Image (cartoon, rainbow, N blue to C red; front, side):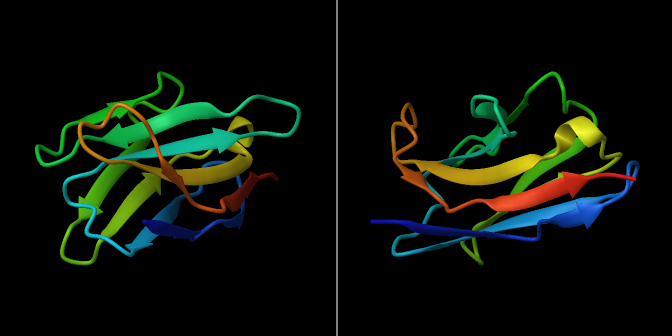
Length: 119
């Protein structure tokens, strides 16, 4: 079992930055593909970013490409989502998820952290 706890959300103004953290416990996640998803009110959950197990390759949704950066610190068993140039449309609950090898299915999910971008 893997437990995931997100933190770092909050209320910010357009153009600001936030860094979300996802701390894992229960197992080492270095071999897991880790993903970030978000869900805005009235909308379906959508993919934001992922970082592939071991090789560290990252993928991003087109809406966040160039603004968000996903990284992992295996020594801390933690994954991060650096969010820059935030827009009101980035407002959502952000979830961290873990996909055990071979990395095709996200099996473990965190409880989410709220990000609100508003002037």
